[in-house]
Length: 300
Image 1 (cartoon, helix red, strand yellow):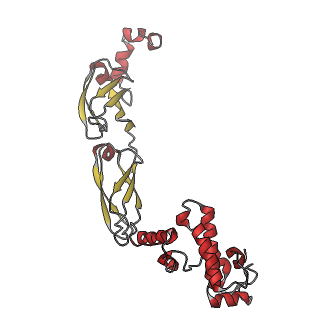
Image 2 (cartoon, helix red, strand yellow):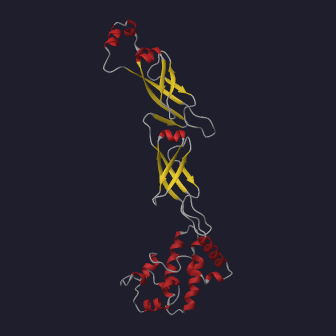
Image 3 (cartoon, helix red, strand yellow):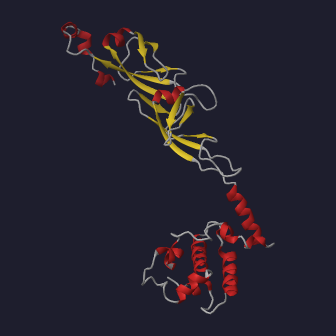
């Protein structure tokens, strides 16, 4: 840890006016508002502010000069009087914000103007945005819904889920975040939505796919079959002679499209035989000559 006199670039015999002058010079050079994004300058500024907080106080300076405060850290008096803690940023000091710069703001230079504007900005700071996570069902992501979130303080937020929302999408509720200061206004509530998977459906963009089991009779003879969709079951006709893998389309039964309209739902059929095996079906197939002669592996 550097000696606070060395940090300020002054001799140990420097007067109070010389200390203040050295600090002002360094503060104008290193202040975070003048060096946005410069972490090195920010850390150096903290060290400079801590050094001046120690030496700029007559009593603290006397005790440091008397050896009660050891800048190297070899002796450990109470933490609030320990220079290393001031420089480390754990202890609050008057220069942690603009409150320690009251005398600086009276000037007419750019630094004084900057501090005045910084103080006004802090006094009217916008509230923080609050982040939440919300799980919804697959069907709710397609059709839309209104969900309620219970907040840590016991309050609630009603969240309108837009139709067609995708997993990981964030909904912004303006003005529902933390309270701001002065005229800053409240922050926003940001809700990241998790869409819970539905084992029946697969979504690809605006289209939805589903595999539907059909009986041998339905596959051979065709006919009406009830098909689940994200917005409720509908009836569709299975064509005669359908096979496992036959894919049908339910137009407009997918997710809402961003520019208007809807995607489609694709229905993949899967022929399922009865269980346990039916004796009549076995007897029929055993005597079905054309069935025995048909080889789908050769046909395919």
